[in-house]
Image 1 (cartoon, helix red, strand yellow):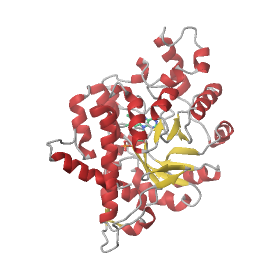
Image 2 (spheres, helix red, strand yellow):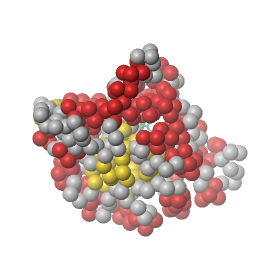
Image 3 (spheres, protein in one colour):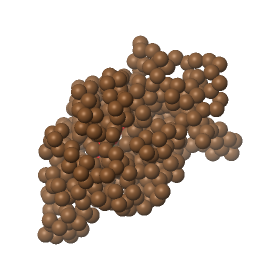
Image 4 (cartoon, protein in one colour):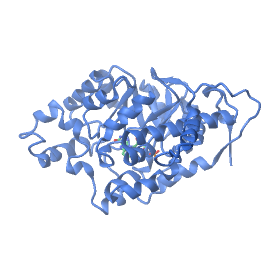
Length: 385
Ligand code: FNR
């Protein structure tokens, strides 16, 4: 598939005065989304923990690496397609798990699922989805999909959710470790805005037979009581490495640990037999003043890249960012905020436009820097300044 061809499509449509519905530059999406979204949802997506230092660090880390273009390397015909944990994809890109998507668009995760399927780009569905596992799977059809777990404090509920995800065709399990309780997020606190408290982003537990079995009245009849039961089930309890075999026991497919930032934790994940990790700091939403996710990627990839798949997120906004992360050892990257802005700006078409733009930018950047395939990328493709 020629991903870069989206460029020609856009220029040709311009002949008929048909311009893209919104920008092709992911660094400008937030500014556009701010014009159409209410402050609560806008800042819930845009904001970070504390002073926002980690959000800024994630972005500025990309500027410390520069691509060194190579010439006359016959990069006309190139391949970006790859397979990660048994899932084929047109380029090493997945949609990161992002909860409560209905706060930016009424179609929420259903629109994302349809857009992702139309491009064969894998989506990772969040436990904090505003739509049920089953409805998202239906919208995603034959598209590739993984499931992200916020590990509930009730083992029976956890098993029930895992079984539902497996039955609905989610092939890999992404266990997010960095958000066992919510960080101090002034942007949300100042507005007292937390979607879950209003029963948004709770569709998966609220539709779960085990969760519902423990309620006197259904969530439809009594949202506040259901929310009060939800809070201690999904926040406030950290776990240890010894808890991981429980997931192996109840999940047959590959398991990915998301939120790894330290080499020793990456090694422990490999020792524990995990199939992959996501080097991620949750887009700077959890620990203020933390290291940029890109800064720790090379060390982690060197230490464990031959033992498990190393995925990456936090701050990816362009084809160049993708290329840099891959050159520094990531097998694939996860796209976060940009596709959520696309959803807010244009629903399913908006997500599709943002993802196609990134794929095209990546393909063209790969080619013009003299790379024919993903295997050509290495730290030698970059210099650190
Ligand atoms: C997230 N992220 C996230 N991660 C996760 O594992 N489960 C979740 O439910 C959510 N929810 C969520 C909501 C919002 C609004 C955002 C912005 C992010 C984190 C996400 O998967 C990813 O790690 C970050 O988005 C990456 O950072 P950037 O690239 O968006 O800055």
